[in-house]
Image 1 (spheres, rainbow, N blue to C red):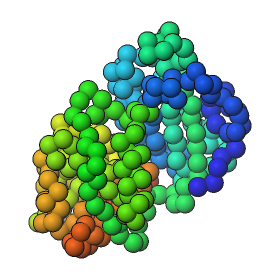
Image 2: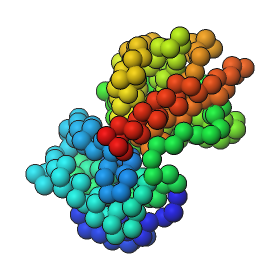
Image 3: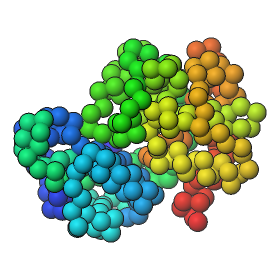
Image 4: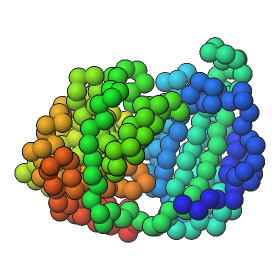
Length: 285
């Protein structure tokens, strides 16, 4: 990705290397924040409504105050201006970070919010299926707890950081997070689906996975192609061994297909059908 020249800091556009955060920043100090990563094409953000709903849900859940000006139209306009200032008119990755305003120790001085919007160029303007399938394995050194925070995309992402290090150390393309009941939850930055006998299965949200925006879109897309979907499953690692296909989904890539888990090898027939239909509905619908 090419580094962009400008970011948006609380509505002001500043150079991306400007010192906009202090050591009092609560996301830095305590992981006291949330974020959304979104895909943009031209100056349009895909599924912005859904991203904004999830973000405001998290803000309220963390007992932060949402100011009157912090509306979807305001954020949409700021993203459009940022894309224009950075001359990003094809594929772009948008990151919107929200954190509780500076001050206090564990107990904050205020529950007001601050935010930063970043934009980076993507290699492809649309969702593009990976040519080479991913090699994955289970990350079981640390398990994800099912609790109040399980469904939040929070600034406290230590589990995923360590899973990423495990992935790198073991020369994997991604690894799968499991919960304390040894059920599959998600990948490092994606939701997971398995395909068996032309039916799609995805872990239940109650098992601790992030309610991914792309996860929801893939379910809708698969239903439009007459697939049978089970999106509330308790999936164990052994279920990967009997799957016909495995793929990962997130808002930036759309779909990434998996070629190997242990000694199993998979194809990508369903992934191809889904990503083609997704692009058709998003970019030409």
